[in-house]
Image (tube, rainbow, N blue to C red; front, side, top):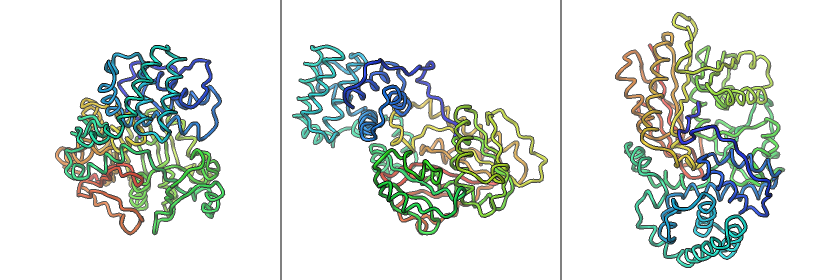
Length: 481
């Protein structure tokens, strides 16, 4: 998927931290939040990665604690800000970024954390004293104790709050999601998923090695897991981690890779079509993991695959993934990787006799994966949704015009807004009379041991995000005559 550019980042930000080494994980939380607020750079994973590298922080539990608090602040940002407005003398916008970092982290932990309130208060007071001023430390002490004492009352009152404040979802996101009646009906499931830590799946990579004893390997790594597929065989749900997921032996040895169930199902739909065809062109291919799943699923792996992406950095990751996860030289020789913009690059295929599949995993608002990137809620507005919807339509419309007859298209986005999903297909039907929608036939109930909620129409298949089950995702399939 081509990554949508975030307009909040006005310039290229150099991620730098002071030489003052943190004494505990809450000081790390402060440092990273301070940097994010100071620079309006809402990239939690990237900031945390650079921070841990700088101070050579390796401990999994330490890093997890830091990430969880920072993600929790943004997952509950509107509610935390609401509480700050009601329990502080000044609104949060009046505080400098360092003061806001202590205040918001403290409020989040008091309300949602598992640590004793006194420990949260004491450590945040010490941070305020050493990093800001003794006066502000006194303020933090008073505010956090006041909120801690009122915690029960706060959560009783929360039940009656506006849904946007209660679940920390901007009104504009709610409005766009609710345009789809199915999403509106299941809004509580969606908001619960948004407000919860993400789940993880791994897929076993049988291109590399056919007989992998993944159960033994995961057990030795002290990883708890669940086999969720009845017939397909290799999406594995991780139910409890004892280490960073990238440190699992299966992942380190390229015997498995991380991919959500929704993306795997999309790969299954593509693989079923590609069996009958000769060439696949993936116009927004990074980071290439759907390609790995497609090849794993193909019976006939002798297919020509062209992977394109506009972003050079992400394309480099794609090349690394393809090289590391595929050892078969014959398969590798059939894969071509190209840096290109799907809106401007022209494949001269009009007169080709080959049978093609065009896959467009378009840039989107990411409203299906908010649990993984809660900071995205900080910069989504109606203009973002409208512009991305235009881009999605333009990508598809252009490639429809350039495709040879009888090309099959698969379109997907990790978004659930009506504008980016079913409405795109409606517009294509209106403006391109030479397309024929193809039914999506995958037996979800019999293939997976999970209560997956989905909407299946002639225009496509939509998964809503569900806590501990699946990311939000949309897939549509059509033929260009």
